[in-house]
Figure 1 (spheres, rainbow, N blue to C red):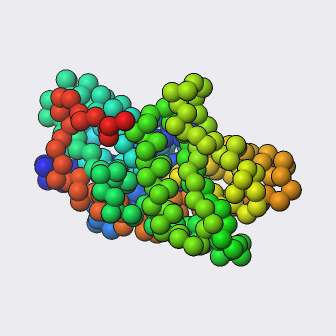
Figure 2 (cartoon, one colour; figure 1 turned 90 degrees about the vertical axis):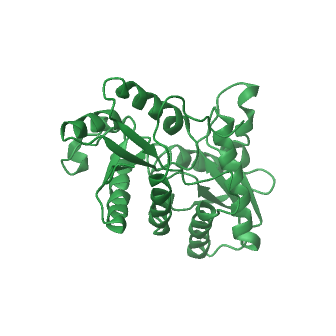
Length: 290
């Protein structure tokens, strides 16, 4: 790889300032560990956030950021995905943009480090261990005894992404062991149609049913705050509605993934793996089968 590539920590992007600020905080911590500058860059959306809510510095998004770097003579980039798994955003949208830019910028070289969850390496439990620690912190904070736990994600139209949810849920059950009465994966929402039923159970249907009628901890498979997982977001509304319907139900949400100090350790490892990867060129390998 070209010496000293420009390093990007990349998330999907959000219209919420809290998400960009979280990305910046992790990028700064990662840069400190690597003794290199790490640029917090979103794929989309974040430029709609008022810079006044971001300390006066506008958010950066992927393609304009790369083009600006080109003006300084930089053509080599390493993307560290701040994503749990093989999402279309990172493994389809981003390569497509890179290939299109490469038509007019032949020296462009972009490598993408592995995402945080590796389905093909079941012994890699780093993400599950971080999530388990966050759940245990909530259990201890609230004085709970063997609560039910649901690992909740956004929901997806892609089975390959859903496999990440189920994979991590299985690992989380092993991490928590007898600290939880049950661990079940759920999703915040899904598209209509039987072909998207793999997202079931939905969180709103799980809460208050069978083993989820008393104390329930939501293990949040969300990286940073936004309109879904942030204060007053969609998850909070689902919890409130469920508690209204059940007198015995109490729900507690774990802290979000990006708040845990070991997240940076994991990203340092993925950065190292990304340095030896092949640059995007031609067709990109498809996500995990499914």
